[in-house]
Length: 180
Image 1 (cartoon, rainbow, N blue to C red):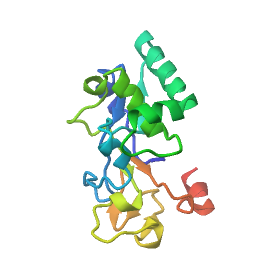
Image 2: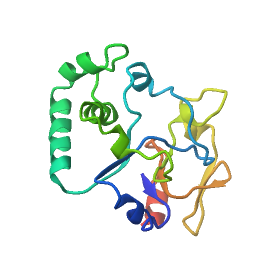
Image 3: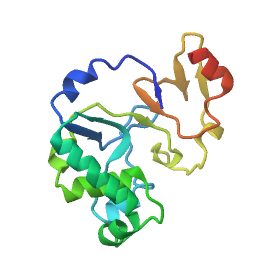
Image 4: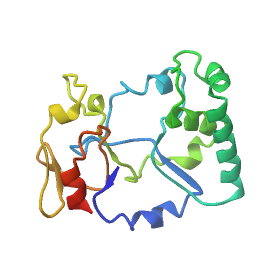
């Protein structure tokens, strides 16, 4: 994840929540991602569409309960997945699925998401870029450039906010040195 601009103004919005997760992500073009290609477990099991890449929490009793449950789900993923992912299961435990199960169990959907929030991030998984064609590696298909002002452009679109680049080969040593 790269934080490409000052997000201090987010804290005022987040202060309205004890626990916040984003449930919508954007493409590099700033569009809401509409593909469920990577979210079949969520869709087929009616789990909350949570993305752990960006979340916020206050230290409080409710969140202590939530994170204790989340820990139990991660440790005992096979037991929970049999119960909550009957229609489509992944054999490995992802934090997104484990968190969705915890949110579902505690019935927190109405407390941890906002349909009106821009508290989200750009997610670069290739098949959620709202393209008709399917690609497996976005860095091989979409041009990108980090200019001398440390502005990141992907497909000639200036990136802002939080950028989840996904592919390890994206962030080169030269880019890392420049950003530092």
